[in-house]
View 1 (tube, one colour):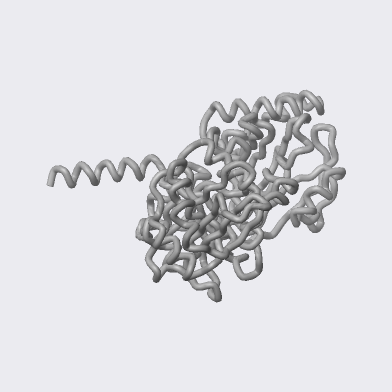
View 2 (view 1 turned 60 degrees about the vertical axis):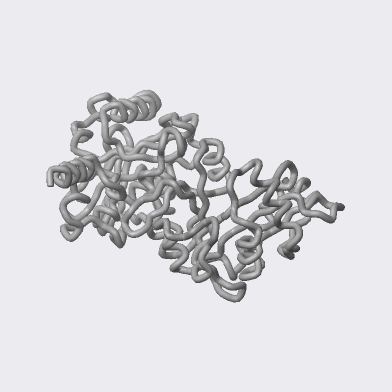
Length: 379
């Protein structure tokens, strides 16, 4: 990539005569684009909106990347469908001296080696002036999705209580970072094959049993009745995947004023991955979303440094104890509930969503919509 970047020149000095030619070439590959006069207007409003790419040694640009640098109202208009993408309203765009709330990747045409120029533009958008602006884009194909993911985009944007999965985003605003996809709900077999999900069916419970049997019964010779101790059906389980292969799991039990994390297991062949770290962080995030302020657990003495890296401390007055031929210590971590933690103020629908899916409408909400539609039709 560095070698390719050296073959491309990038500039935001827009020549009016270049615009019609570039849009005509791009339109054959992309489809309908904004009119040349619209692109020129956007570029004159903010030169950082339009970037031209040329092969080194050639004077005429052959590709481009364009962005809409949006203020707060523009960001909302984009997500609510009020922004005209073929003729963006000037009131939603920021000037070069203003800090944007969002950078929307408007259109790009980068045939061949010219794609290397995109990194140069993104470097500009990583500068302090733009660092707190979310980068937002769209894609409607699996190929486009994979390209987004490779560049660090996450699928889906939270806006006004709704999860919009047509958008992709690199979240950078503090407010956005607080609203991003929960750590415990990042796996999707098609779009996000590496991630974590909360177990909601018996197929996933079979995957949990297979992982723990391999790790605890197979590797550590733990008796079956000690590993499967009667608490699994009274617990919440998290399952980690790498390329859709189940690789690790965690169990959480919830008590009056604390949650207990236990049975962390990662298959031997995946222990060089981040699965164990991601499972712990996802489990803590889930406890925060349920409003807990304290997490309790048991750590093998030789694994205590791992847990301490997440903020766990040895429980005061807790002496080492043993079971299943291992020595453990008690540990605790004090946490702050999530700003969106579940409460009675949420109303009935959020509280009946499937475990770990409180961030999006559940099947019973869809049935309510069906009932409302039926009532409207009868009226």
